[in-house]
Amino acid sequence: MPYSCLFFCLVFLFSKHEILNNARGNFLSSNALDYVPVLFFHGSMQTAFDFKQADLRAIRDRLSLQFGKIPDKERLDPLSQFVCSFLGSVTPNPISWGAFARLVLRYQTWDAVADAPEADIEALIRNVTYSEKKAAELKGALRKIRACYGKISFDFLVDLEIGQALFQLEQIQGVGRKTAAATLNFSTLRGRAFVVDASILRVLRRFGFVGANASTEASYDAVMAAADDSMPMISMNCIGS
Image (cartoon, rainbow, N blue to C red):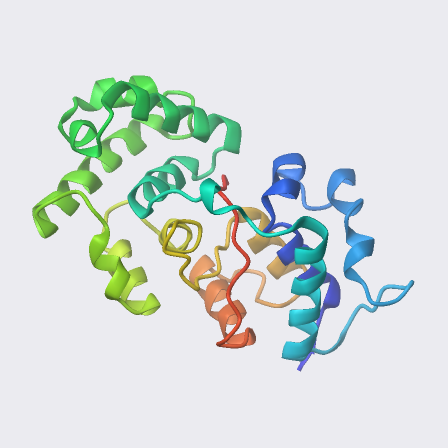
């Protein structure tokens, strides 16, 4: 099956927080392209070839050598990562991180957020995209978690298979595949779930790895199917749009 080398380079390129922080919003920005040469095996670009797991591993190894691993101290607990990713939908990192920090400083616990008036939550996250909608859905999500599991905690995710964990998270209103996968992968759970944000979905479509109208879920399935079961996904911190 023909795959695009450039596609995988860019996908994993944009899965590193060092580059995402500089190249957010345009996967062909000059900042991003500055890093592309390190990913190729030869001086010229190979645009398509029969992709093998060894190739994917080689690309990953090159990225790891260049940028290193994400320090454990940068990972959030699953629930905090959930909130961070929830706020980060269609929102740049600096804005979503700011909103997340204001919630933490104001309420201290997620129980307090769940019990806070929606208007107060919305005021703290006002600069994120769809802040009014997210305030209501975040409050509702936290209350649903507490009602279902007796406390606001994602401890139950630890013992679930990835597919089961994704399913449980996606039952929460406002939670799609990106937020669910980010909760599992970027947090201390280190779950093997590839996170498809808007930038990565654009790359997947443009290079023909998925159809022009492929959904986030379909794109997730395609990438996971192409990866070796023993190879963990590259992860990063909270991502935006």
